[in-house]
Image (tube, rainbow, N blue to C red; front, side, top):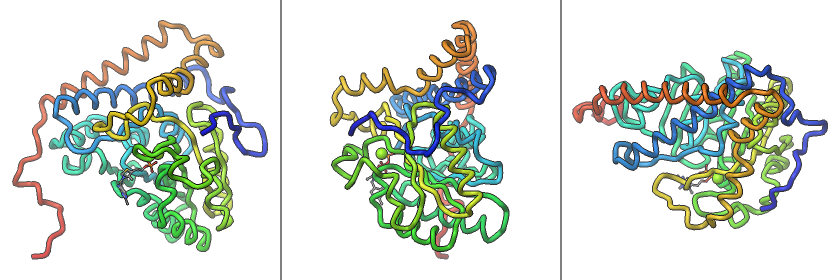
Length: 340
Ligand SMILES: Cc1ncc(C[n+]2csc(CCOP(=O)(O)OP(=O)(O)O)c2C)c(N)n1
Ligand SMILES: [Mg+2]
């Protein structure tokens, strides 16, 4: 995969030129760093055997969920696959409840019985957290149908991975969304891998996943996913287009995941050297930190203060989890459908 591509919007993208004030940009830094450090705590919990089952991290891909926070309306719905910690946090869910969920504890956001892949918070417009690859495209069309049916002016933002774009349900969903004029923004989070399979090995015409809706007349765009301000600008444009035209748009956003597919993946299919390179040059948090220091004149001490704030909140979350209890065994089949 060539990394030197340009976005394909018709006019200039506001890359690194902030539409945000200095203090708003520092807030964005705090929010991206919070997601990263939250997931680093997850790594510790997983290693200690406290988080069990699947656990997929979005480290390296934090710019999108945070930019979504600043571009979607409160009434819009968001749905994604299992790499969902960043999305639900940026949608405004209580991070303690999310951590309790990951630990299978009482007070978890899905009652402690969904775990990492099944985070859910409709009151924050977040509709999962889904383990089935491609499911978010079909369910996303359903959410968009509901917005249209209820005339509530909302749109659905449905995220899926590069691997998921090979799923039949993605094409069926795009066909229905275009045919019925459903207000849905499909975002392909292209992190260059589908488990251990590189995008070139798994996807035909891998350079142009953004064009996969063309057969249905769906406009497609591509942009860099490691530059917060570029992501913000592209999202704004795409969301506006969906709202105005009341029909689907497809946005491909490219950003590397820095960890394995899930916590159990040692990632042997990537060389240490290539990973080191992308971490150095395509880290959205590092990139934003550079912008803050070089363009906004934010001092090292101010950045340090944000880092301390993040740690402080996470320490409080840690305390909450230490006082919480695992979901009792006799509650395991509550809320589970079964024939009587
Ligand atoms: C229908 C279905 N097929 C296969 C799997 C197994 N599986 C889990 S994740 C994954 C890779 C998906 O990659 P991608 O869509 O690029 O998302 P990423 O993990 O990179 O975020 C596969 C094949 C699944 N969960 N669901
Ligand atoms: Mg992928």
